[in-house]
Image 1: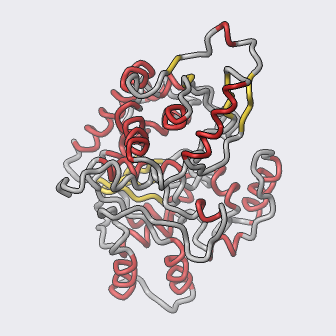
Image 2 (image 1 turned 90 degrees about the vertical axis):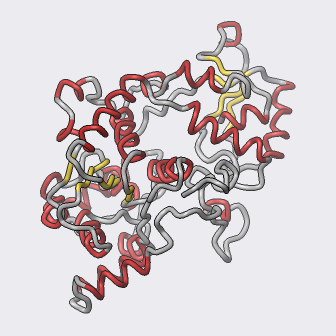
Length: 381
């Protein structure tokens, strides 16, 4: 929205965060980010205020749902709203601006906002750095595994592979009762075959071993509460016993301030993931994309993005006894992921055959890969 405010010559009011999500986190922008740093870093680009001035609180305002992935021209047209309104209330702020075909100064402003202006609050930043130091003090490199296997993710995506009938039903009921989730009836098998499901902890374990990671590898689990608890992690832990959680390296006193604030604990995961030697997301959600893009900006740090669609076929062959863990499996998985490890490349366009506005949904997100606009091509990788 920083870039949109610039295009529309608007003053940006510090955003209010969504509190309707599954996590029901009451955190404010200032609880998570360094608000003053955000405002001062961008003061030469866009006017920012902490809250709406009192003299504008009672004036009529436009409530606008800006169209997703809109062009600069779209927002220039939207400036006609200023003829009638002094305040525009933007109902949604995610994916409102196009990924591509924008002026270079707008693209670079997006990166300035993301990677320079947005800084976590001192409380989060300080603890995050301490946790990274404690991981490093164990004398090894570490993988940050974004294990997106929480209840809300499985319910939202309709992914029930490996779950009991009772668990599947619990997730279905949750989806039915969550009003702002549009998709209610989901075919779990089709979701999995299409590569739309997060990898299970067991699948992640097989995947990492096939890539050649040793059982002694230190793995930080960046995640909320895993659906199914510790029992769901047993097969991953049998392959990689050195699993580390926030609770492993932080004291109860340190984490006390973050209780019931999942956005703030996610920020700790973000810091640890950015600083990891390797980042691996089990699903391509918003946080995974943001971390990958940030790591690219910092020098294309190694990020392995699993080819979930391709891996499902391999896992099913393993399950059917048509393939065994070992050199053959390792070769297949390694070859499949040679070009999925964060090396410099231009952003991917829309998928072939997709037409109309739907094609924008299939593009690689700018935040997932800000190359080349925000990364010097001469940078050593």
